[in-house]
Length: 332
Ligand code: UT7
Image 1 (tube, rainbow, N blue to C red):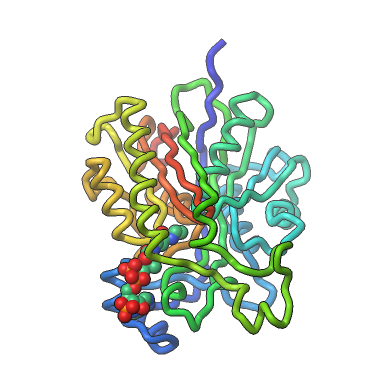
Image 2: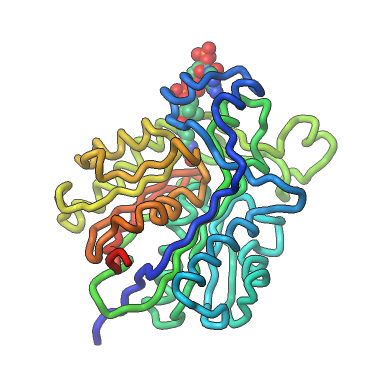
């Protein structure tokens, strides 16, 4: 029997209208456009404004694009996975809320938290359901409203993050395209370098946790940077070697968009030309689980059936990984 593969058949993405640029940030904290551009490479980020608006609202917009493009009916979806670190609520899962808002009633749905590697983990998980023959139409969403956990008095983190959501539709195929392989890793030693200190079961919200600003992102940037550079490149090079893919045979690298310097270092280690690396960090900043699918949305028209694409990420946990895709369709 021929192997069943899981292939991306459609993509959709959404970034909110409001743009927070470096100039505006420099009026809020002691920073400059020059520092942010040279150290990180971000010019602006999109921010979700509006009372009562959360991650699910952006995810819904991303999935609607997929429904519109493909004519898929909500009843056809049989699994929804939402990768996020900024769920609408601690529970129920944002995937449940997205499903409700889109009238998806024949699926099971759950959230997956793997920091900035969330989309890779979710895509890998979804592909297993399809390869096993258990599911036929799966929505994999990466969505984060990072502005809800950013401390806009902390210049070391507030310049980095933005809000966005993007999604892919994953379906079965017997063709040799789709998710080919993944190398996923995690090591909890890194949890002290990137986290949110309060709001979980160890330290529930209290006056004290609020006074201490412990419901915001904490990051020891230098440590995270060091590990991100080596680990993202290690697994991506390992993937190329495992599948005998020479740099010229790789059509695209889709790196998590956390820092331009991390992206450049990863591409260099892989021997990939800069023009094969998807980079949109300038316009969105780090949108955590949304960075990688958002790149796929923006580059969709340049992707051709059979293209070798490596997705690579590193994030809180630490979590990291690379995933090899053979793109499944030509531009329409
Ligand atoms: O997506 C999840 C994974 N996250 C990442 O991959 C992020 C990894 N880390 C990074 O990208 C970088 O470490 C940062 C962009 C967060 C920081 O860049 P850096 O080159 O490591 O800067 P630094 O933390 O070593 O700070 C250098 C200086 C410090 O000043 P002093 O102590 O040398 O006087 C900072 O206080 O830059 C200062 N600084 C700033 N200056 C202006 C830190 N943030 C800013 C700022 N504007 N926004």
